[in-house]
Every structure is written in C-alpha cells, then in structure tokens.
Amino acid sequence: MRILVTVKHVPDLQSNRSFTDGTVTRTADDGSMNELDEHAVEAALQLVEAAGEGEVYALTVGGPDAIAAVRKALQLGAHHAIHVSDVGIAGSDVFGTAMIIAAAVRKLHAEAPLDMVVTGMAALDGLTSMLPTALAAELDWSQLTLASAVSVADGEATIERHLPDAHETVAASLPAVVSVTDEANKPRYPNFKLIMAARKAEVPVWTLADLGIDPALVGGDAARATVVEASERPPRENRRHVTDKGEGGRELAEFLIEKGLA
Amino acid sequence: MSTDTVAVLIEHRDGAVTPPSLEALTLARSLGTPIALWLGDAPAADAVAQLGEYGAAEVRVVGIGDDARLPAKAAAAIAAATEDAPVLVVISTFVTKEIATRLAVLNGAGVVVDAAGASRVDGHIETFQTVFAATWNVRTRIDADRAIVGVRPNTTQATPAESPGAATLTQVEATLPQTRERIVAVEPVDQGEGVPLAEAPVVVSGGRGTNGDYTLIEEFAGVLGGAVGASRDATDEGWISHEHMVGQTGTTVTPALYVACGISGAVHHRGGMQASGTIVAINMDPDAPIFEISDFGVVGSLFDVIPQAIETIKAHRGE
Ligand SMILES: Cc1cc2nc3c(=O)[nH]c(=O)nc-3n(C[C@H](O)[C@H](O)[C@H](O)COP(=O)(O)OP(=O)(O)OC[C@H]3O[C@@H](n4cnc5c(N)ncnc54)[C@H](O)[C@@H]3O)c2cc1C
Ligand SMILES: Nc1ncnc2c1ncn2[C@@H]1O[C@H](COP(=O)(O)O)[C@@H](O)[C@H]1O
Image 1 (cartoon, rainbow over the protein chains, first blue to last red):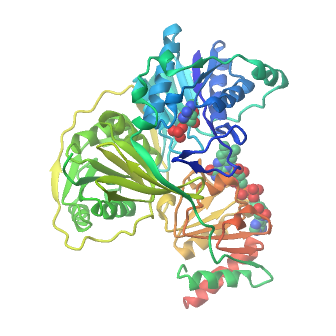
Image 2: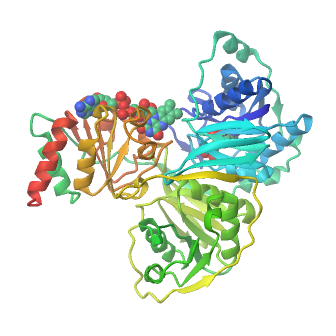
Image 3: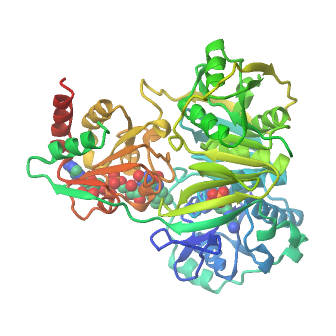
C-alpha cells in the first residue's frame, strides 16, 4: 500500500487571521499544518498498517514556511516528505494547486505505483473542500470524498459518507483520491523519537520545472478568481448581556420580541 | 460569451422546490435572465409555475435519476444543459461544491462557493462572502469567461418577479460519462417535520451544557419556528445525531437568529455560525467565548432561562 497524503500549511485558527493584497497572510510564527489533515495522515497510516506493508508520503504545496506542515506529518508517522515550492506557485487557485499536486503524484506514481491520495476534508483557511474533487478530476482517478470510514479490499476502496440528507456507502477502483473527515479517526500523538527524527529529516523540494509545469498555467495570474477587496468586519454593535437573577428568561424573551424574532 | 443567461441549479425535495432555490432564482434575476435547471424526474405543473413566478423563463430538465448523486455525472448533465449560460448559480452544500468543481474542470469556469451574494460589475461576476469565522468580508471577482457561484441559504430574500411569465419546460438529453465510483448503499436521513438545519431561519443549538437532554432545546426551537442544532461534543456523546452538528466540519448555518444554549463557543463551532444575523447565548460561565460574539447573552442555567423565555413568549402571543 503506497499512499500520498496532502497536508496544507494554514494560519493558526486561534491567531488573528488576515488578508494581505488579496491572499491569506501566511507567516511561520502562527501557521501550522491544517488540523483536519491530521486525520488524513492517520487514515493513511491505518490503511498501511491494515495492509501489513507500505509507505506514506506527505506532500505540501506552498512557500518556504509550508515545510512545517510536512514536518508535522513526519512527526505523526509519515515515512517520507515532499515540499513543492516555487515563486511561480504563489496565488494559485484550487485548479492551479490541483494541477501541481497531480504532477507530483504522477512523478511518484511513475517511480512506483501509488494506490491512493488521502486528503483532509477541508483546509481551515478557505474551507472550500474543493481540492480533493479537482485533484481526482485532474488525475482521472476515482473520487471518494468526505469519508468518515475507509477500507480497502481487492483493489477497491469503500467509504462511508454522512451527508445531511443521506448516509452513503460508495466504492471505487484504485487508484483513488480519498478525503477524510474529522470523524474518520483519532490522530495519534507524535512520540519523542519521531519528533526528533522529523526535525532532522531531509525534505526534498520540488519546483515547477521539476514537475514539468508551465508557470503560465499556475500562480496568481492563472487564477480564475481574484479577491478584489478584503476588510475586517466591525464587531457587533449594541451587544447586551444580563445575569440571570430569576428574570433572565423574561429578559431574553423581551429582547427577541422587541427584535421581531419571536 | 455574450448571453446574459443565468442558470440556477434547483434543489428539490419530494418534488417540491426548496426555499433556498427561490432565493437563488431571486439573486439570479439581478445577474441576468434566469433559467431553472432540474435534475431528476420532470417537475409537476405547480413546481414549474412557482419557478416561473420567481423569474425562470425556462425550466430545463435532465432526467438522470440517482446518477445525480455522483458529482461527475451531475456535472456532465449540467454542462450539457447550460452551454449557452455563462453563469451558474447553485446552493452551496458539500455535494454542490463537488459538482461545481467537476464542472469547472470541464468548462474552465471560475468558482466561488459559500457566497452571501453576487453582482455584475463591469461585465464580471463579483461575489461577497465572509471568511475566517465571519471576521472578514471579502469581495471576489471571477475573471474566467464562465462563472459558478455557490450561494449560502438565507443570504438573499426570496421575492417573486415583478412581471413573471409562464416558464416553458424543456427536456435535455445528456450523455453521461462512465464513472469508477459506484454507490453501494444510500440510507436517507429522517429529516423529521422541521426545516433542514442549513435552511432554517432560526436555529436553537444545545451543547455539553444540556447534559444530553434536548427536550427544552426542541421545545424552544418549536416555539421560535426553528431547527435544532448541536455542538460537536454533543454529537460525539451520541446525545443527538451527527446531522445536527453546527460548525466548520458540520453544517454551516446563517439563520436570522442563532441561539446557543450550553455551548462554550469554541473556534470550530463559531466557524459554522458566526455569520448568523442575531446571536443569542445562554451559558452559566460569564467567561465563555460565545459571549464575545453574542448580541444578547444570559449568564445563567439553560434549565432556568429557557422555560421562562418560552412562557413569556407564549404569554405575549396570548397562548
Ligand atoms: C478538527 C476539529 C473540528 C471540530 N469541529 C467542530 C464543529 O464543527 N462543531 C463544533 O461544535 N465543534 C467542533 N469541534 C469541537 C470544538 O473544539 C469543541 O470541543 C466543542 O464545540 C465544544 O462543545 P460544547 O460547547 O458543547 O462543550 P464545552 O466546550 O464543554 O462547553 C459547554 C458549555 O456549557 C456551559 N454549561 C454547562 N451547564 C450549563 C447549563 N446548565 N446552562 C447553561 N450553560 C451550561 C458551560 O459553561 C460551557 O461553556 C472540533 C474540534 C476539532 C479538533
Ligand atoms: N497547498 C496545499 N498543499 C497540500 N495540500 C493541500 C493544499 N491545498 C489543499 N490541500 C489538501 O486538500 C484538502 C482540502 O482543501 P480545500 O479544498 O482547500 O478546502 C486539505 O485538507 C489538504 O489535504
């Protein structure tokens, strides 16, 4: 079982997230591996363990700071890491990013076949959940998204997915792109040995040229949509708080009635 | 592309048009000339009439049945039916995001999902939305020749067209691709009587503070005409099913009124509700983070506050 996991470097949820010139501000200080990608790493490790053999590659696409994301994946137990970084990548939209990841997948797949790409369900910066689908389409591999459970047997992967209107069981032939939700598993804690090894690990950096990608097809200039304005929202006004001393429910009801909400 | 046709992917349940679809049609009218796109068995006359009333000049039907559950097939069906429409509006859900992405890979469209609105500026579609748990406003211009906009429910007020015409019904034949994915089983979720969470104008949510008893939450939601939501901790405990989970990995909601009861307001929860109109919180802990974003907060026990609030509202209504 040979699996590639995609991990994204995103601003920390608890930090003051912001925009600079139409893109998400990314700094080394308050960035980390997208929390939801921990579940992707865990799912890949469990599949390899269930198969009794195999390797997990962690891949990130992003600027120099993004290396922190793959180091985190190594701490969690990924066996190898790859960092795709190039000035031409900056500002890529989901389609550009999918093209880059697909090229990296093909490069690895040519060395020895990959069975699967596992991704998180969403990157917590944009929360679009579009990349896994775009990647499956780009690679023309099976698409199994939003899995809360995943298993492999006889060259086929089967997932469970919980949608608001239905619970689905979907199966597809390998190779497949599988995105997993935070319900799929409980990520393990990194152990000391892995933490030390991850710090020292040599992480190869692949450029657009290494991947044979025409820089005109990716990056900000190729993006199909552009953020033209971003502004911090003002805090809510006229906020009221009361302490219940026996009248809290009545006060709440009066607030709702006055606002026309009840 | 020179036409101003705006296709709207209609969401329907048991043959009825859903309220977000009427919102999407209303929005589409401000962007151009709407046509309604209907995947599945042809709609009944009253549904067609309603789509006409909200401005659809035409209803295009692609009878793809259960294949609509596979994004690659749904995208191919939509592509076949919307060649002449440079703009497509869908209601933003996990499934339509996948369909939109597939379609954009096919036709080169620019995509914005989870938008709160859109307008036409200098020939381009521009969208607005909130990001980072509704702490920022963002305006995005779609530069590609085709645009797909996923709009969140409850962000446009649905209004009938001023001078509606009768919508014509057209059947479109589409050749669907073979897919490797195969749906092995589908188990419908019992939606109960109420409105689905994502569409509800009012959401009353309970968290760990309910201690697993949702009776009061359900009663309060009933009185306010809303749906019941929950925090992740509550669904993890098995107190209430996963479909009720509000948050960035659950359902994102933007109701006019959100009532958080016994919920601390962790950043993951806030990510799914912070863009709501009015936010009310009931929590025993005055330092709970939910109070940082609430318009009206009651520091107290939900078991005291909710019954009194219900009683007061009923008395006001003369019930
Ligand atoms: C990757 C990831 C994704 C996540 N996604 C989500 C998500 O989508 N949605 C989500 O909700 N969570 C999510 N979480 C979990 C989130 O971080 C919090 O753990 C969760 O939201 C807390 O739920 P809670 O507020 O019910 O519980 P708690 O944080 O335990 O808060 C309970 C609150 O109830 C109050 N209380 C107790 N008794 C009463 C009473 N009688 N009356 C009034 N108040 C009372 C307490 O003061 C306390 O503030 C996610 C976590 C991770 C790691
Ligand atoms: N730049 C990136 N590098 C690596 N993985 C990514 C990147 N962007 C998105 N992903 C993966 O795609 C998943 C979904 O992201 P998104 O579609 O952006 O919400 C994430 O959880 C990651 O696994």
